[in-house]
Image (cartoon, rainbow, N blue to C red; front, side, top):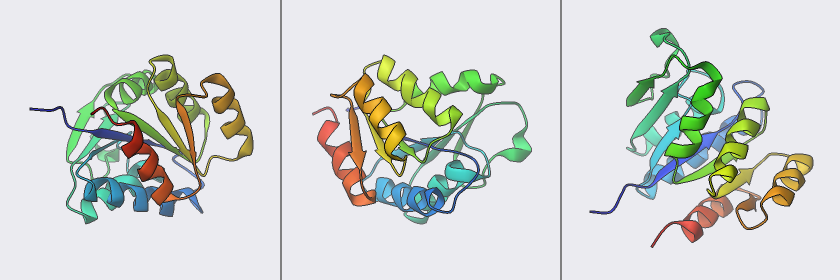
Length: 163
């Protein structure tokens, strides 16, 4: 039996003017493709938006929770993994994702993308801005894919999935 595809959707927990709707659309599209969605699992930002989108399409969501505060878990998370590790959970996010998609950019998201690239994982950047796109593309040109919209992000994910 093949391993399930786990799409890690990472992004900031604030400033959701553009990232929030993109993350929700991406979560929905991932679920419609039959992929599991993994996020940081909290009840705000890209994490909550992606899980909400996935749940709207009947998908399964995994939340890698940084602390031990279960009150902050998104109600759209099916499988909460309580780490008590703070930002060290970024490594779990990166390593547990088949493909990582960054929606927007912040310090934590940058760490997750860097860790994924360090482990030879493909990363799709959606709505991250020109500087971040140039930076990560220069670090690992064969692993970084820039997407202009959710459809392109899904196409990139499909193109790098193991056969």
